[in-house]
Image 1 (spheres, rainbow, N blue to C red):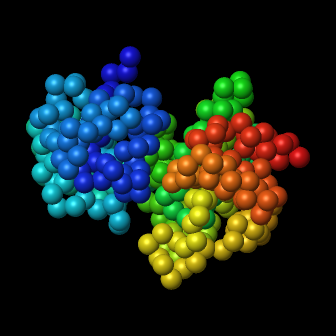
Image 2: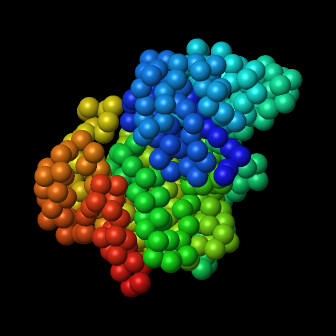
Length: 342
């Protein structure tokens, strides 16, 4: 049994699929157990049978060893009230892992408190110091590379990559999930949060990730997507991943029924056919990747409506379509394997 046991800090956001997505990713996919979730607004409830507690003190009898920041705030900053929460975790002897842009390892007060209580602070989003531009090694990686891309942010690109990796490994394939964000790093235990990388070095970071994925034994690499080419704020990280990871194929992720960029009501989404063409035309010239399949997020629909939405997208795009969480990843995996074998 793992020595690491998580208390996931999700104050005010444990019920929010967007801002609480890190919490959900850790609970659903991390190999280390989550013994409690902290959210004083929902104390006494549960998520995936994990109890939600109202304070650090309430969680301690459950035996956590690590407090993980389970929220993804806009701008990656801690809300003011969180400072006391972090200090309470440190005083309780818990290591702290954070994936926000505000680095806890560079906060003098928190660092001094951690040293006094003998605990470790870890910033999952802090990039390596020696990143640079791509070298061309991304085109020499002895593996097939698949990148998940999306019509929007926070719609399941990481989840789709993890589910496809699991399905591939269940078939005995030498498959590796390549994490590019803080939640993926918490799940896999390695990676680079590419949205914290200097823009000139973003493609170089993506190249380094696929090289490491192959070095870890991957003959099939599932690169976690970030942002969206259709997003007015977060398109740059997507382009850097596309050119740096040099994928052989894409899986396009879309939320069923979505018509506009979330949070940007004046920005309508392109059609799925337009998105497919956009990604294929924007691919690295030396490796013109194609979209192999569409992964449809149907969580807001009932079973009949979900299946109808999947059939409609398949008719619209002419590509195999499915919801890997709801219906399994096998159909999408078959489509990707067919595409990368060409």
